[in-house]
Length: 153
Image (tube, rainbow, N blue to C red):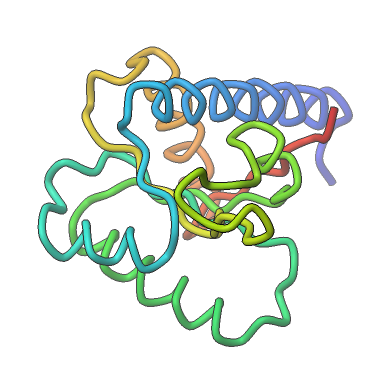
């Protein structure tokens, strides 16, 4: 059984990492260092994996088999390339943060926020480091792919 004070510290670490991830993604988007979409991400990983510093996989529905296959392939590639991976629950929160629509598409077509790649290691380095530490700590406790739940506001 885990002591009660450990639950508090785990919850605080998750909240802190969640906020850091949100800030990192918004900053990366503003600096044009965020690749959004499964296919766009796969193309970038195929052409220039060295520029990728974080892979974020987001899904609220575990029943989508096709999406899970894409995630498995992306996770494998990222692991082989030494890219930090983070699974996120809270696609709706991502839509709030990053905008639900892409200006280059029909307004009714939502952006594919299931996979995002942060490129350029200089992007808000402090927040990137905080997310990276959370991922390392999570892997130490036998979480192959660390997870975070984003809270809607």
